[in-house]
Length: 292
Ligand code: PXG
Image 1 (tube, rainbow, N blue to C red):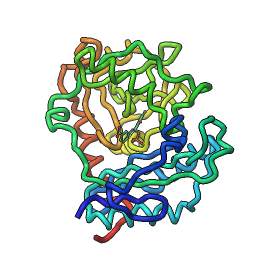
Image 2: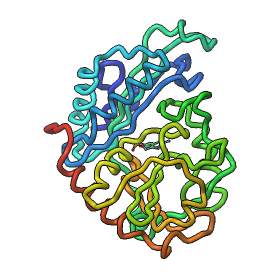
Image 3: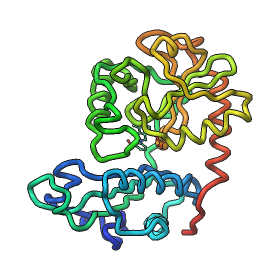
């Protein structure tokens, strides 16, 4: 049995899961999405992901033709149809089919699709050895141009940064904003540890308010870390005790080198490793349960 995809209310075979070339998601990147994970039959932070999806759609004035409850059911149904206990879920809502003009009023119904597939885990050595990063020339989208808080189908800002990191022969890119302040990576938020302080940039510098970021901030207290959202520069990262990234796909991943400067002792930090342990406990325990 092949992969079953949810498409506009139906579960269809992968080969039949196709959208129109007139869909504005494709023609203009006009749409929103979420990347969600399930762990052993529990969907982690599903409500938070759905809230963020509907908030992004609200600002873009995309009307999602399903209630949040119905959307939650559609996600769980897709997981069950594919008999997946540990999955990566991609939920996409586009403006829908229109004509060859960008006017969204021509699109009468949003397109919804949900792909649930096996999770492609990051290589183990990333967690054991840590990542190498560079800051890249492409600056993060200005919040008053295309706010990074919206999880839209337009990821070209991030893709350009990823290309620059790859060209530099490293794992990931750090994007700065137009003022030179650290924002985030191409698909992860960034944190640093200095003494008892755990710092991460505030949303207004131009970041996606990550759901893993929020979960890590909530865990910090139990590890005797004091969380602060602060505006900071590359220097603060170079001189930190520890740096790590957070995201649904990556979870928590240590960073050991930035712009050729070793971070701390050049190895994954103790606080980072302790946070990974705590995070694994909550992903194994919390979430929306489904039976397959
Ligand atoms: N910043 C950006 C720009 C992101 O796209 C995060 C931070 C982390 O947010 P969450 O809510 O996941 O903690 C993201 C998330 C993918 C993929 O397939 C991308 C993300 C999440 C899952 C998968 O590239 N981005």
